Amino acid sequence: MDKSPKRIGELFDDISPNYDLLNHLLSLSIDVGWRELALKELAIGDGDVVLDVATGTGDMALKARSSADCIIIGIDLSRNMLKAASEKWKARFPDDGFMVLQGNALQMPFADNSFDRSMVAFGIRNMTDIGGFLDEAYRVLRPNGRMAILEFSVPPYPVIRQAYLLYLTRALPFIGGLRSGNRGAYHYLSESIRRFPSPGSIEELLVKHRFRTVRSLPLTLGICHLYIIEKDAAEGEPKR
Image (cartoon, rainbow, N blue to C red):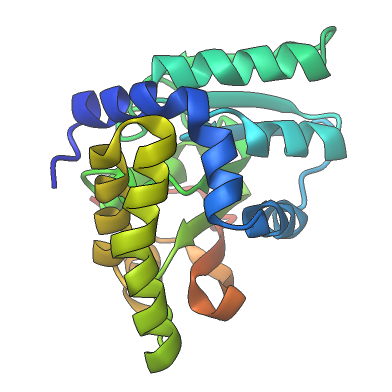
């Protein structure tokens, strides 16, 4: 699969007008509860500086700001998704700014130890180098900083797994393509979910890149997984 930043940015630029509707439609709105749980476990406090990686149309950022008086910075490859996020933010918080930046999460223009909290919802599987992203996330988090990673996974239970794979390969591209006019984009999204490493492999990768896993939770029979991780209190450079 082509996961180059240019390709991913263009893909999400193209589907941005229908992204929120299709997200909720294709997940039967279960994704709303997943995001709420991720934010509850992230435990954002008033005054925290929060990084929202692959912010998309800003759903996680909006929910986070609704729960705490925090400062949020969003980064994403797609200009159109960031535009949608900014518009939603202005409608909800007209007197409160939301800083968004078009950029690559593998090369973030932030100083070391800049953020108290970080989060990435359904974006890590689109990255060319997950380990490289974890190094960057470690670098910009403050000591004791916490990050939430929310991502789709393939259920381990045979019957549910087969039904889910049928949905991914047939229903998702058909419904998504019919509504958005870009069936190829939803073929990519389906394939990216099927090829994403298992939760066990991700947990090993987190350890390799110096994060401590606080929670590793399968959600909705394993079709989604939540990882809550922390940077050690002792400051150090991420392993390369």
